[in-house]
Length: 288
Length: 346
Image (tube, rainbow over all chains, first blue to last red; front, side):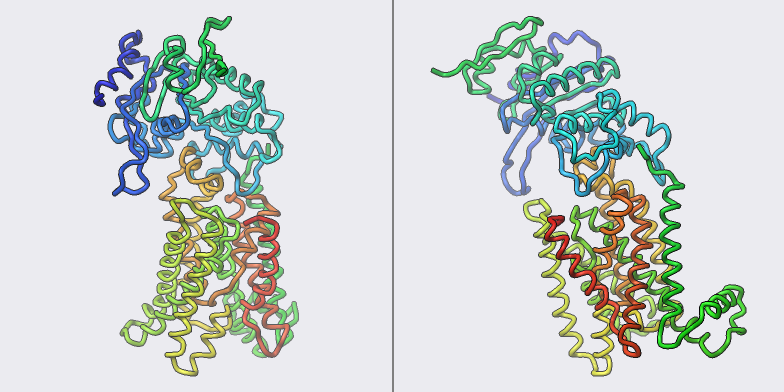
Protein backbone atom coordinates (compact mmCIF):
# COMPACT_ATOMS: atom_id res chain seq x y z
CA UNK A 1 0.00 0.00 0.00
CA UNK A 2 1.47 3.37 -0.92
CA UNK A 3 1.67 6.26 1.50
CA UNK A 4 -0.96 8.55 -0.08
CA UNK A 5 -3.61 5.83 0.08
CA UNK A 6 -2.95 5.31 3.73
CA UNK A 7 -3.11 9.02 4.34
CA UNK A 8 -6.48 9.18 2.69
CA UNK A 9 -7.65 6.40 4.95
CA UNK A 10 -6.35 8.19 8.02
CA UNK A 11 -7.61 11.66 7.34
CA UNK A 12 -10.50 10.98 5.00
CA UNK A 13 -13.02 9.92 7.56
CA UNK A 14 -12.49 12.91 9.76
CA UNK A 15 -12.26 15.63 7.11
CA UNK A 16 -15.30 14.13 5.42
CA UNK A 17 -17.65 14.87 8.28
CA UNK A 18 -15.91 17.89 9.82
CA UNK A 19 -18.79 20.29 10.31
CA UNK A 20 -16.89 23.40 11.33
CA UNK A 21 -15.31 26.08 9.18
CA UNK A 22 -11.56 26.64 9.36
CA UNK A 23 -12.01 29.73 11.56
CA UNK A 24 -13.06 27.58 14.54
CA UNK A 25 -10.01 25.42 14.18
CA UNK A 26 -7.29 26.16 16.69
CA UNK A 27 -4.89 23.30 16.09
CA UNK A 28 -4.40 21.98 12.60
CA UNK A 29 -2.05 19.06 11.97
CA UNK A 30 -1.62 18.75 8.22
CA UNK A 31 0.00 15.69 6.63
CA UNK A 32 2.75 15.64 9.25
CA UNK A 33 5.44 12.98 9.03
CA UNK A 34 8.69 12.39 10.88
CA UNK A 35 11.67 10.05 10.78
CA UNK A 36 14.04 9.42 13.65
CA UNK A 37 17.55 8.08 13.25
CA UNK A 38 20.35 8.40 15.81
CA UNK A 39 22.84 8.95 13.01
CA UNK A 40 22.05 10.73 9.72
CA UNK A 41 23.84 8.09 7.65
CA UNK A 42 21.73 5.22 9.01
CA UNK A 43 18.26 4.20 7.96
CA UNK A 44 15.65 5.69 10.31
CA UNK A 45 14.83 3.61 13.39
CA UNK A 46 11.37 5.00 13.59
CA UNK A 47 9.04 6.80 11.22
CA UNK A 48 5.73 8.54 11.67
CA UNK A 49 3.71 8.51 8.49
CA UNK A 50 1.62 11.42 7.27
CA UNK A 51 -0.93 12.24 9.97
CA UNK A 52 -3.67 14.86 9.92
CA UNK A 53 -6.31 16.09 12.35
CA UNK A 54 -7.86 19.31 13.54
CA UNK A 55 -9.05 20.45 16.95
CA UNK A 56 -11.09 23.40 18.19
CA UNK A 57 -10.91 25.43 21.39
CA UNK A 58 -12.36 23.49 24.33
CA UNK A 59 -11.84 20.11 22.65
CA UNK A 60 -9.94 17.16 24.10
CA UNK A 61 -8.06 14.93 21.65
CA UNK A 62 -6.63 11.63 22.93
CA UNK A 63 -3.75 9.93 21.13
CA UNK A 64 -3.97 6.16 21.62
CA UNK A 65 -1.87 3.22 20.55
CA UNK A 66 0.42 0.47 21.80
CA UNK A 67 4.00 1.14 22.93
CA UNK A 68 6.34 2.47 20.22
CA UNK A 69 3.45 3.49 17.99
CA UNK A 70 4.65 7.12 17.78
CA UNK A 71 2.31 8.75 20.31
CA UNK A 72 4.95 10.77 22.11
CA UNK A 73 6.66 11.66 18.82
CA UNK A 74 3.42 13.11 17.49
CA UNK A 75 2.98 15.08 20.72
CA UNK A 76 6.51 16.50 20.51
CA UNK A 77 5.90 17.47 16.88
CA UNK A 78 2.75 19.32 17.94
CA UNK A 79 4.74 20.99 20.74
CA UNK A 80 7.20 22.27 18.16
CA UNK A 81 10.13 20.44 19.75
CA UNK A 82 10.79 18.48 16.55
CA UNK A 83 10.64 19.73 13.00
CA UNK A 84 8.32 17.63 10.83
CA UNK A 85 9.90 15.86 7.86
CA UNK A 86 6.94 16.98 5.78
CA UNK A 87 3.63 18.70 6.39
CA UNK A 88 2.99 21.40 8.95
CA UNK A 89 1.34 22.04 12.29
CA UNK A 90 -0.57 25.28 12.72
CA UNK A 91 -1.72 26.78 16.01
CA UNK A 92 -4.05 29.70 15.31
CA UNK A 93 -2.40 29.96 11.92
CA UNK A 94 1.23 29.93 13.16
CA UNK A 95 3.62 27.07 12.42
CA UNK A 96 4.50 25.78 15.92
CA UNK A 97 8.05 24.79 15.04
CA UNK A 98 8.99 28.26 13.76
CA UNK A 99 7.90 30.17 16.87
CA UNK A 100 10.65 31.29 19.25
CA UNK A 101 10.81 29.19 22.45
CA UNK A 102 9.46 32.12 24.45
CA UNK A 103 6.41 32.77 22.24
CA UNK A 104 5.80 29.04 21.90
CA UNK A 105 5.75 28.64 25.69
CA UNK A 106 3.15 31.42 25.93
CA UNK A 107 0.85 29.38 23.66
CA UNK A 108 1.72 25.74 24.26
CA UNK A 109 2.15 24.08 27.65
CA UNK A 110 3.58 20.58 27.87
CA UNK A 111 3.02 18.25 30.81
CA UNK A 112 5.63 15.51 30.62
CA UNK A 113 6.24 12.39 32.60
CA UNK A 114 7.70 13.68 35.81
CA UNK A 115 11.37 14.54 35.81
CA UNK A 116 13.77 14.47 38.71
CA UNK A 117 14.76 17.84 40.09
CA UNK A 118 18.46 18.35 40.74
CA UNK A 119 17.90 20.47 43.82
CA UNK A 120 14.61 20.51 45.77
CA UNK A 121 12.15 23.36 45.32
CA UNK A 122 8.84 24.36 46.89
CA UNK A 123 5.50 23.84 45.15
CA UNK A 124 4.89 27.58 44.69
CA UNK A 125 8.38 28.06 43.22
CA UNK A 126 7.68 25.24 40.78
CA UNK A 127 4.32 26.71 39.69
CA UNK A 128 5.84 30.19 39.28
CA UNK A 129 8.22 28.68 36.70
CA UNK A 130 5.18 28.59 34.42
CA UNK A 131 5.37 32.40 34.31
CA UNK A 132 8.89 32.27 32.88
CA UNK A 133 7.88 32.94 29.24
CA UNK A 134 6.23 36.21 30.35
CA UNK A 135 9.19 37.47 32.41
CA UNK A 136 11.19 40.61 31.73
CA UNK A 137 14.84 41.59 32.12
CA UNK A 138 15.59 40.65 35.74
CA UNK A 139 12.60 38.30 35.85
CA UNK A 140 11.56 39.03 39.41
CA UNK A 141 8.07 37.71 40.01
CA UNK A 142 5.36 40.36 39.73
CA UNK A 143 2.06 40.56 41.64
CA UNK A 144 0.29 39.37 38.48
CA UNK A 145 2.56 36.32 38.24
CA UNK A 146 1.86 35.41 41.86
CA UNK A 147 -1.91 35.83 41.40
CA UNK A 148 -1.92 33.69 38.26
CA UNK A 149 0.19 30.98 39.94
CA UNK A 150 -2.13 31.03 42.96
CA UNK A 151 -5.22 30.71 40.73
CA UNK A 152 -3.60 27.89 38.77
CA UNK A 153 -2.98 25.94 41.97
CA UNK A 154 -6.55 26.64 43.11
CA UNK A 155 -7.94 25.46 39.74
CA UNK A 156 -6.38 22.03 40.19
CA UNK A 157 -7.40 21.98 43.87
CA UNK A 158 -3.82 21.99 45.17
CA UNK A 159 -3.56 25.43 46.74
CA UNK A 160 -3.04 24.02 50.22
CA UNK A 161 0.16 22.32 48.95
CA UNK A 162 1.87 25.59 48.02
CA UNK A 163 4.42 25.63 50.85
CA UNK A 164 5.34 21.94 50.63
CA UNK A 165 8.54 20.62 49.02
CA UNK A 166 8.13 18.99 45.60
CA UNK A 167 9.82 15.78 46.75
CA UNK A 168 7.49 15.40 49.74
CA UNK A 169 4.10 15.19 48.01
CA UNK A 170 2.37 12.14 46.55
CA UNK A 171 2.39 11.14 42.88
CA UNK A 172 -1.17 12.34 42.33
CA UNK A 173 -0.48 15.64 44.06
CA UNK A 174 2.68 16.11 42.02
CA UNK A 175 0.79 15.49 38.78
CA UNK A 176 -1.72 18.21 39.77
CA UNK A 177 1.11 20.63 40.60
CA UNK A 178 2.76 19.97 37.23
CA UNK A 179 -0.62 20.65 35.61
CA UNK A 180 -0.90 23.88 37.63
CA UNK A 181 2.46 25.03 36.28
CA UNK A 182 1.17 24.39 32.74
CA UNK A 183 -1.98 26.42 33.52
CA UNK A 184 0.20 29.28 34.81
CA UNK A 185 1.60 29.52 31.27
CA UNK A 186 -1.94 30.54 30.17
CA UNK A 187 -1.61 28.49 27.00
CA UNK A 188 -3.96 27.99 24.08
CA UNK A 189 -2.87 24.40 23.76
CA UNK A 190 -2.31 22.00 26.61
CA UNK A 191 -0.30 18.86 25.81
CA UNK A 192 -0.03 15.94 28.22
CA UNK A 193 2.25 12.91 27.85
CA UNK A 194 0.79 9.95 29.76
CA UNK A 195 -0.40 12.08 32.69
CA UNK A 196 -2.18 9.14 34.32
CA UNK A 197 0.95 6.99 34.60
CA UNK A 198 1.66 5.97 38.22
CA UNK A 199 -1.71 7.32 39.40
CA UNK A 200 -4.34 5.25 41.20
CA UNK A 201 -7.80 4.97 39.61
CA UNK A 202 -9.36 7.75 41.69
CA UNK A 203 -6.53 10.13 40.82
CA UNK A 204 -6.81 9.18 37.13
CA UNK A 205 -10.53 9.91 36.98
CA UNK A 206 -9.95 13.08 38.98
CA UNK A 207 -7.30 14.28 36.51
CA UNK A 208 -9.34 13.56 33.38
CA UNK A 209 -12.51 15.09 34.83
CA UNK A 210 -10.39 18.10 35.78
CA UNK A 211 -9.08 18.38 32.23
CA UNK A 212 -12.62 18.18 30.87
CA UNK A 213 -13.68 21.03 33.16
CA UNK A 214 -10.57 23.14 32.43
CA UNK A 215 -10.96 22.71 28.67
CA UNK A 216 -14.53 23.98 28.95
CA UNK A 217 -13.78 26.83 31.38
CA UNK A 218 -10.54 28.17 29.94
CA UNK A 219 -11.18 27.19 26.28
CA UNK A 220 -7.97 25.17 26.07
CA UNK A 221 -7.41 22.72 23.29
CA UNK A 222 -6.12 19.60 25.05
CA UNK A 223 -4.09 16.83 23.41
CA UNK A 224 -3.36 13.90 25.68
CA UNK A 225 -1.29 10.77 25.07
CA UNK A 226 -2.61 7.87 27.12
CA UNK A 227 -2.90 4.12 27.47
CA UNK A 228 -6.25 4.38 29.25
CA UNK A 229 -8.79 3.43 26.54
CA UNK A 230 -11.79 3.79 28.79
CA UNK A 231 -10.82 7.14 30.25
CA UNK A 232 -10.11 8.44 26.74
CA UNK A 233 -13.43 7.05 25.52
CA UNK A 234 -15.23 8.74 28.39
CA UNK A 235 -13.62 12.18 28.29
CA UNK A 236 -12.19 12.81 24.80
CA UNK A 237 -14.04 14.52 21.95
CA UNK A 238 -11.78 12.89 19.38
CA UNK A 239 -9.42 9.98 19.53
CA UNK A 240 -6.52 9.26 17.22
CA UNK A 241 -5.36 5.67 16.88
CA UNK A 242 -1.71 5.02 16.04
CA UNK A 243 0.00 1.75 15.22
CA UNK A 244 3.71 1.47 14.40
CA UNK A 245 3.90 5.07 13.20
CA UNK A 246 0.71 4.89 11.14
CA UNK A 247 -2.38 6.88 11.96
CA UNK A 248 -5.17 4.34 11.49
CA UNK A 249 -8.20 6.44 12.36
CA UNK A 250 -9.28 9.80 13.81
CA UNK A 251 -12.76 10.61 15.06
CA UNK A 252 -15.15 10.58 17.98
CA UNK A 253 -14.59 7.61 20.33
CA UNK A 254 -17.73 5.83 19.13
CA UNK A 255 -16.43 5.82 15.57
CA UNK A 256 -12.90 4.66 16.41
CA UNK A 257 -13.68 2.10 19.14
CA UNK A 258 -14.55 -0.84 16.94
CA UNK A 259 -13.85 -4.28 18.20
CA UNK A 260 -11.92 -5.69 15.22
CA UNK A 261 -9.86 -2.53 14.81
CA UNK A 262 -8.86 -2.34 18.49
CA UNK A 263 -8.17 -6.09 18.64
CA UNK A 264 -5.88 -5.81 15.65
CA UNK A 265 -4.05 -2.74 17.01
CA UNK A 266 -3.63 -3.90 20.59
CA UNK A 267 -3.25 -7.64 19.74
CA UNK A 268 -5.65 -8.62 22.52
CA UNK A 269 -9.13 -10.11 22.39
CA UNK A 270 -11.59 -7.55 23.74
CA UNK A 271 -15.20 -6.45 23.58
CA UNK A 272 -16.63 -2.98 23.03
CA UNK A 273 -20.02 -2.04 24.44
CA UNK A 274 -21.93 1.15 25.14
CA UNK A 275 -21.57 2.43 28.70
CA UNK A 276 -24.31 4.20 30.70
CA UNK A 277 -22.99 7.61 29.58
CA UNK A 278 -23.45 6.65 25.93
CA UNK A 279 -19.68 6.38 25.49
CA UNK A 280 -18.00 3.19 24.29
CA UNK A 281 -16.43 0.95 26.91
CA UNK A 282 -13.68 -1.57 26.26
CA UNK A 283 -13.37 -4.79 28.21
CA UNK A 284 -10.45 -7.11 27.75
CA UNK A 285 -11.78 -10.64 27.40
CA UNK A 286 -9.46 -13.21 28.90
CA UNK A 287 -8.10 -15.83 26.55
CA UNK A 288 -9.29 -19.31 27.53
CA UNK B 1 4.18 31.68 49.01
CA UNK B 2 7.24 33.89 49.29
CA UNK B 3 8.14 35.08 45.80
CA UNK B 4 11.50 36.76 45.36
CA UNK B 5 11.42 40.54 45.78
CA UNK B 6 14.17 43.02 45.01
CA UNK B 7 14.41 44.07 48.66
CA UNK B 8 14.95 40.48 49.84
CA UNK B 9 17.59 39.94 47.16
CA UNK B 10 19.41 43.14 48.16
CA UNK B 11 19.15 42.34 51.88
CA UNK B 12 20.73 38.91 51.42
CA UNK B 13 23.54 40.38 49.35
CA UNK B 14 24.04 43.19 51.88
CA UNK B 15 24.50 40.70 54.72
CA UNK B 16 27.21 38.87 52.77
CA UNK B 17 28.81 42.14 51.68
CA UNK B 18 29.04 43.15 55.35
CA UNK B 19 30.72 39.83 56.20
CA UNK B 20 33.10 40.32 53.27
CA UNK B 21 33.97 43.79 54.59
CA UNK B 22 34.80 42.38 58.04
CA UNK B 23 36.93 39.65 56.45
CA UNK B 24 38.78 42.25 54.34
CA UNK B 25 39.52 44.36 57.44
CA UNK B 26 40.84 41.31 59.28
CA UNK B 27 42.95 40.36 56.25
CA UNK B 28 44.41 43.87 56.08
CA UNK B 29 45.25 43.78 59.78
CA UNK B 30 46.81 40.33 59.97
CA UNK B 31 50.30 39.61 58.70
CA UNK B 32 53.97 39.72 59.55
CA UNK B 33 53.75 43.46 60.42
CA UNK B 34 51.03 44.31 63.00
CA UNK B 35 48.67 47.16 62.07
CA UNK B 36 46.24 48.93 64.43
CA UNK B 37 42.56 49.19 63.41
CA UNK B 38 42.68 52.93 63.94
CA UNK B 39 45.69 53.38 61.70
CA UNK B 40 44.09 51.12 59.10
CA UNK B 41 40.86 53.14 59.01
CA UNK B 42 42.74 56.43 58.84
CA UNK B 43 44.93 55.25 55.99
CA UNK B 44 42.03 53.79 53.99
CA UNK B 45 40.08 57.04 54.32
CA UNK B 46 43.11 58.97 53.13
CA UNK B 47 43.42 56.73 50.07
CA UNK B 48 39.73 57.24 49.32
CA UNK B 49 40.01 61.01 49.54
CA UNK B 50 43.09 61.06 47.35
CA UNK B 51 45.49 62.01 50.11
CA UNK B 52 47.80 59.02 49.80
CA UNK B 53 50.82 61.26 50.35
CA UNK B 54 49.83 61.74 54.02
CA UNK B 55 49.92 58.02 54.85
CA UNK B 56 52.45 57.31 57.59
CA UNK B 57 55.34 55.74 55.79
CA UNK B 58 56.10 52.91 58.29
CA UNK B 59 53.35 50.48 57.34
CA UNK B 60 51.34 52.40 54.74
CA UNK B 61 53.33 50.74 52.01
CA UNK B 62 52.63 47.26 53.33
CA UNK B 63 48.90 47.74 53.77
CA UNK B 64 48.04 49.80 50.71
CA UNK B 65 50.55 48.55 48.17
CA UNK B 66 50.93 44.90 49.14
CA UNK B 67 47.98 43.61 51.19
CA UNK B 68 45.14 45.59 49.58
CA UNK B 69 45.87 44.67 45.94
CA UNK B 70 46.27 41.05 46.96
CA UNK B 71 42.90 41.11 48.77
CA UNK B 72 41.19 42.75 45.80
CA UNK B 73 42.69 40.05 43.60
CA UNK B 74 41.40 37.38 46.00
CA UNK B 75 37.89 38.89 45.87
CA UNK B 76 37.88 38.82 42.08
CA UNK B 77 39.31 35.30 41.80
CA UNK B 78 36.93 33.89 44.43
CA UNK B 79 33.87 35.50 42.86
CA UNK B 80 34.85 34.35 39.37
CA UNK B 81 35.40 30.74 40.41
CA UNK B 82 32.19 30.57 42.48
CA UNK B 83 30.03 32.07 39.70
CA UNK B 84 31.62 29.76 37.10
CA UNK B 85 31.05 26.76 39.39
CA UNK B 86 27.41 27.67 40.09
CA UNK B 87 26.59 28.02 36.42
CA UNK B 88 28.45 24.82 35.43
CA UNK B 89 26.49 22.89 38.08
CA UNK B 90 23.17 24.12 36.68
CA UNK B 91 24.05 23.80 33.01
CA UNK B 92 25.55 20.31 33.29
CA UNK B 93 22.93 19.25 35.86
CA UNK B 94 25.77 17.99 38.01
CA UNK B 95 26.23 19.02 41.64
CA UNK B 96 29.94 18.12 41.52
CA UNK B 97 30.77 20.27 38.49
CA UNK B 98 33.31 23.05 39.07
CA UNK B 99 36.06 24.59 36.91
CA UNK B 100 38.75 22.63 38.77
CA UNK B 101 37.05 19.20 38.78
CA UNK B 102 36.06 19.52 35.12
CA UNK B 103 39.66 20.22 34.11
CA UNK B 104 38.77 23.72 32.89
CA UNK B 105 41.27 25.29 35.29
CA UNK B 106 44.04 23.01 33.98
CA UNK B 107 43.09 23.93 30.43
CA UNK B 108 43.23 27.61 31.33
CA UNK B 109 46.63 27.09 33.00
CA UNK B 110 47.95 25.40 29.86
CA UNK B 111 46.61 28.26 27.73
CA UNK B 112 48.26 30.80 30.04
CA UNK B 113 51.61 28.99 29.93
CA UNK B 114 51.49 28.75 26.14
CA UNK B 115 50.81 32.49 26.02
CA UNK B 116 53.77 33.14 28.37
CA UNK B 117 56.04 31.06 26.16
CA UNK B 118 54.80 32.73 22.98
CA UNK B 119 54.97 36.28 24.32
CA UNK B 120 58.72 37.00 23.88
CA UNK B 121 58.49 35.81 20.27
CA UNK B 122 55.68 38.19 19.40
CA UNK B 123 56.58 41.85 19.30
CA UNK B 124 53.53 43.25 21.08
CA UNK B 125 52.96 46.59 22.74
CA UNK B 126 52.99 46.34 26.58
CA UNK B 127 49.19 46.84 26.76
CA UNK B 128 48.54 43.96 24.36
CA UNK B 129 51.15 41.80 26.06
CA UNK B 130 49.25 42.19 29.34
CA UNK B 131 46.13 40.89 27.62
CA UNK B 132 47.87 37.89 26.09
CA UNK B 133 48.00 35.67 29.20
CA UNK B 134 44.32 36.09 30.21
CA UNK B 135 43.31 35.61 26.59
CA UNK B 136 45.38 32.41 26.32
CA UNK B 137 43.81 31.19 29.58
CA UNK B 138 40.32 31.94 28.23
CA UNK B 139 41.01 29.98 25.04
CA UNK B 140 42.39 27.08 27.07
CA UNK B 141 39.31 27.09 29.33
CA UNK B 142 36.84 27.28 26.42
CA UNK B 143 38.59 24.48 24.51
CA UNK B 144 38.62 22.25 27.61
CA UNK B 145 34.95 22.70 28.48
CA UNK B 146 34.04 21.91 24.86
CA UNK B 147 36.21 18.77 24.98
CA UNK B 148 34.78 17.63 28.33
CA UNK B 149 31.24 18.25 27.09
CA UNK B 150 31.81 16.08 24.01
CA UNK B 151 33.70 13.34 25.91
CA UNK B 152 31.18 13.29 28.77
CA UNK B 153 28.22 12.49 26.52
CA UNK B 154 27.42 8.92 25.77
CA UNK B 155 24.76 8.22 23.15
CA UNK B 156 23.48 11.75 23.45
CA UNK B 157 22.97 11.51 27.21
CA UNK B 158 25.04 13.22 29.83
CA UNK B 159 25.91 10.89 32.67
CA UNK B 160 27.15 12.46 35.86
CA UNK B 161 29.95 9.95 36.38
CA UNK B 162 31.07 9.93 32.72
CA UNK B 163 31.30 13.70 32.77
CA UNK B 164 33.39 13.78 35.95
CA UNK B 165 35.71 11.09 34.62
CA UNK B 166 36.09 13.02 31.37
CA UNK B 167 37.03 16.07 33.45
CA UNK B 168 39.58 14.18 35.54
CA UNK B 169 41.17 12.57 32.49
CA UNK B 170 41.32 15.91 30.69
CA UNK B 171 42.88 17.57 33.74
CA UNK B 172 45.62 14.93 34.04
CA UNK B 173 46.34 15.15 30.29
CA UNK B 174 46.65 18.94 30.55
CA UNK B 175 48.93 18.61 33.60
CA UNK B 176 51.19 16.24 31.67
CA UNK B 177 51.54 18.77 28.84
CA UNK B 178 52.19 21.53 31.39
CA UNK B 179 54.98 19.37 32.96
CA UNK B 180 56.48 18.84 29.54
CA UNK B 181 56.45 22.58 28.83
CA UNK B 182 57.85 23.45 32.24
CA UNK B 183 60.91 21.26 31.78
CA UNK B 184 61.71 23.20 28.62
CA UNK B 185 61.63 26.49 30.56
CA UNK B 186 64.66 27.88 32.39
CA UNK B 187 65.32 26.86 36.00
CA UNK B 188 64.47 30.22 37.58
CA UNK B 189 60.98 30.15 36.16
CA UNK B 190 60.32 26.63 37.36
CA UNK B 191 59.82 27.34 41.06
CA UNK B 192 57.46 30.25 40.43
CA UNK B 193 55.47 28.17 37.96
CA UNK B 194 55.09 25.27 40.38
CA UNK B 195 53.78 27.66 43.04
CA UNK B 196 51.45 29.32 40.57
CA UNK B 197 50.05 25.96 39.43
CA UNK B 198 49.04 25.18 43.02
CA UNK B 199 47.04 28.40 43.14
CA UNK B 200 48.81 31.49 44.39
CA UNK B 201 47.86 35.13 44.85
CA UNK B 202 51.29 36.54 45.69
CA UNK B 203 52.47 37.37 42.17
CA UNK B 204 52.35 41.06 41.31
CA UNK B 205 51.14 42.39 37.97
CA UNK B 206 51.14 45.44 35.81
CA UNK B 207 48.45 47.94 36.71
CA UNK B 208 46.52 47.56 33.43
CA UNK B 209 45.95 43.86 34.08
CA UNK B 210 43.75 44.87 37.02
CA UNK B 211 41.55 46.77 34.61
CA UNK B 212 41.29 43.75 32.30
CA UNK B 213 40.33 41.64 35.31
CA UNK B 214 37.72 44.07 36.65
CA UNK B 215 35.99 44.77 33.34
CA UNK B 216 36.16 41.12 32.28
CA UNK B 217 34.65 39.97 35.57
CA UNK B 218 31.70 42.37 35.49
CA UNK B 219 30.90 41.73 31.83
CA UNK B 220 31.09 37.91 32.13
CA UNK B 221 29.32 37.69 35.50
CA UNK B 222 26.65 40.12 34.22
CA UNK B 223 26.12 37.97 31.13
CA UNK B 224 25.64 34.89 33.31
CA UNK B 225 23.24 36.79 35.57
CA UNK B 226 20.95 37.54 32.62
CA UNK B 227 20.41 33.76 32.35
CA UNK B 228 19.70 33.27 36.08
CA UNK B 229 15.99 32.55 35.62
CA UNK B 230 16.76 30.21 32.70
CA UNK B 231 19.27 28.27 34.82
CA UNK B 232 16.51 27.63 37.40
CA UNK B 233 14.47 25.86 34.72
CA UNK B 234 17.48 24.02 33.31
CA UNK B 235 17.78 22.19 36.64
CA UNK B 236 14.78 20.14 35.52
CA UNK B 237 16.42 19.24 32.21
CA UNK B 238 16.94 20.84 28.82
CA UNK B 239 13.71 19.53 27.26
CA UNK B 240 11.53 20.73 30.08
CA UNK B 241 13.26 24.12 30.08
CA UNK B 242 12.64 24.43 26.36
CA UNK B 243 8.91 23.82 26.82
CA UNK B 244 8.88 26.63 29.40
CA UNK B 245 10.33 29.10 26.91
CA UNK B 246 14.07 28.84 27.55
CA UNK B 247 16.21 29.30 24.45
CA UNK B 248 18.50 26.43 25.53
CA UNK B 249 21.24 26.73 22.83
CA UNK B 250 21.58 30.48 23.50
CA UNK B 251 21.78 30.03 27.29
CA UNK B 252 24.31 27.22 26.87
CA UNK B 253 26.52 29.37 24.61
CA UNK B 254 26.35 32.44 26.87
CA UNK B 255 27.16 30.45 30.00
CA UNK B 256 29.99 28.43 28.42
CA UNK B 257 31.72 31.50 27.02
CA UNK B 258 31.17 33.67 30.10
CA UNK B 259 32.21 30.90 32.54
CA UNK B 260 35.31 30.24 30.42
CA UNK B 261 36.19 33.95 30.58
CA UNK B 262 35.76 33.92 34.38
CA UNK B 263 37.87 30.78 34.78
CA UNK B 264 40.49 32.08 32.35
CA UNK B 265 40.81 35.40 34.18
CA UNK B 266 41.02 33.74 37.59
CA UNK B 267 43.58 31.15 36.47
CA UNK B 268 45.77 33.62 34.57
CA UNK B 269 46.38 35.63 37.76
CA UNK B 270 46.18 33.00 40.47
CA UNK B 271 46.79 29.56 38.96
CA UNK B 272 44.45 26.64 39.56
CA UNK B 273 42.73 27.24 42.90
CA UNK B 274 40.57 24.19 43.55
CA UNK B 275 37.25 23.57 45.31
CA UNK B 276 36.07 27.18 45.57
CA UNK B 277 33.74 26.74 42.60
CA UNK B 278 32.47 23.47 44.05
CA UNK B 279 32.14 24.24 47.74
CA UNK B 280 30.80 27.79 47.76
CA UNK B 281 27.66 27.18 45.61
CA UNK B 282 26.67 24.24 47.84
CA UNK B 283 27.02 26.22 51.04
CA UNK B 284 25.08 29.14 49.57
CA UNK B 285 22.38 26.79 48.30
CA UNK B 286 21.97 25.37 51.81
CA UNK B 287 21.55 28.89 53.21
CA UNK B 288 19.65 30.77 50.48
CA UNK B 289 17.98 28.02 48.40
CA UNK B 290 18.53 27.03 44.78
CA UNK B 291 17.06 30.08 43.00
CA UNK B 292 19.88 31.31 40.76
CA UNK B 293 18.67 34.90 40.90
CA UNK B 294 19.80 34.81 44.54
CA UNK B 295 22.40 32.07 44.26
CA UNK B 296 24.65 33.75 41.66
CA UNK B 297 25.24 37.04 43.55
CA UNK B 298 25.49 35.31 46.95
CA UNK B 299 27.93 32.74 45.53
CA UNK B 300 30.04 35.59 44.10
CA UNK B 301 30.24 37.22 47.53
CA UNK B 302 30.73 33.87 49.27
CA UNK B 303 33.55 32.94 46.89
CA UNK B 304 35.25 36.25 47.63
CA UNK B 305 34.94 35.65 51.39
CA UNK B 306 36.29 32.10 51.04
CA UNK B 307 39.36 33.02 48.98
CA UNK B 308 40.27 36.09 51.06
CA UNK B 309 39.97 33.99 54.24
CA UNK B 310 41.99 31.12 52.75
CA UNK B 311 44.68 33.49 51.49
CA UNK B 312 44.92 35.24 54.87
CA UNK B 313 45.39 31.84 56.52
CA UNK B 314 47.89 30.82 53.83
CA UNK B 315 50.13 33.80 54.53
CA UNK B 316 49.82 33.76 58.34
CA UNK B 317 49.83 30.14 59.58
CA UNK B 318 53.45 29.47 58.62
CA UNK B 319 54.64 33.14 58.69
CA UNK B 320 57.09 34.43 57.65
CA UNK B 321 56.90 31.65 55.02
CA UNK B 322 53.76 31.32 52.84
CA UNK B 323 51.57 28.48 51.60
CA UNK B 324 49.95 28.63 48.17
CA UNK B 325 46.25 29.53 48.66
CA UNK B 326 45.31 26.49 46.55
CA UNK B 327 46.76 24.25 49.25
CA UNK B 328 44.47 25.88 51.84
CA UNK B 329 41.32 25.54 49.73
CA UNK B 330 42.17 21.92 48.92
CA UNK B 331 42.64 21.08 52.59
CA UNK B 332 39.15 22.38 53.33
CA UNK B 333 37.53 21.37 50.04
CA UNK B 334 38.66 17.78 49.55
CA UNK B 335 36.92 16.43 52.69
CA UNK B 336 33.70 18.19 51.66
CA UNK B 337 33.95 16.72 48.16
CA UNK B 338 34.15 13.23 49.69
CA UNK B 339 31.22 14.04 51.99
CA UNK B 340 29.04 15.13 49.04
CA UNK B 341 29.99 12.00 47.10
CA UNK B 342 29.13 9.76 50.06
CA UNK B 343 25.80 11.51 50.60
CA UNK B 344 24.89 10.62 47.01
CA UNK B 345 24.59 14.20 45.82
CA UNK B 346 26.54 13.38 42.67
